[in-house]
Length: 227
Length: 208
Image (cartoon, rainbow over the protein chains, first blue to last red):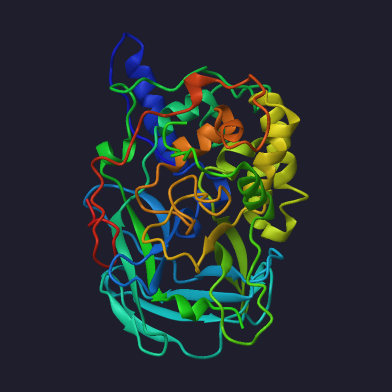
């Protein structure tokens, strides 16, 4: 989740704004220090919806590396494997995966996509699928001929909307702990009792104009049918 | 909950069944490929030798972020887990938050556990709905569509706040009203206005 900066309304607002910015920059979507320290691993949102272009298709999207400033850019991490994992039989373990990886940096990055296919290993340590990789360029849609699908990986407007700043006010534990000057003794103790009213509540992303790195894959629903 | 469209004709029993069944998968016994329920999550994994080791996991928005504390490594533990482990980890986070922070009844808490566990995004590919709706499968379509998943414009924060702090669970007939809703916490008063979603691939708005 994310948030932006404050509208000054009282004498203490300048201090509040400074704290808010620190949280927003330091904590991205309220993830842990380990993930924040390596933004290419930081997944901020997931979407799955029917294709607006073709009712036979479904769209999978994941956002990573949040809080790219307006006009800025970032690279997908070439040492990170990004995966959609799909459970087909309700056991909480993946039966098919879509794998996405990158080489290079910046505008010259190449995108490689494979799946949906059965994984080599189920669980939290994985290896690359061995076949049917399709390559393309970042920031340019390309097709996956074998799948009858298409792929986009690149910079997009961050699609999330949320009053992140007030969330951190209510539950300061959910900010990065190092950003707290006085962490609550009980991390679950709410420190405020309400959200800000309409007109004062702020979507820091809309107002701050932040971007993310998005991976969007459109494929026929039949690619995910059960046998 | 302002963002849940709760139709008066919905059957309480079927809603309860939908919520508690969760991801049922396709149960057809024939061999023809069937479009059914799937449950999806994403991971990022860092190269370690020839393998990649999970570093982050995300599916439903604001679940791990709200329920799990950073203290005691709870958020981190869930990032590194797989959904089959949620019953032993995330379940405890939901239990603590719902009963101690939100002050909800055990009956309401049990429904929330059923909806958010496992922490996977449930999609019914057999639905012919033209739009997604967050928690649509678990609520029998009460959030707007039986497809489930998540649309770009879904106000997932308000939907979640309604479940945790509002009367969504009792309004759906899934548990008795415990009288402990906190109306000042049921919406963050932010919506999708200003976003640049499009109806053409890749659908997410152009960068700022």
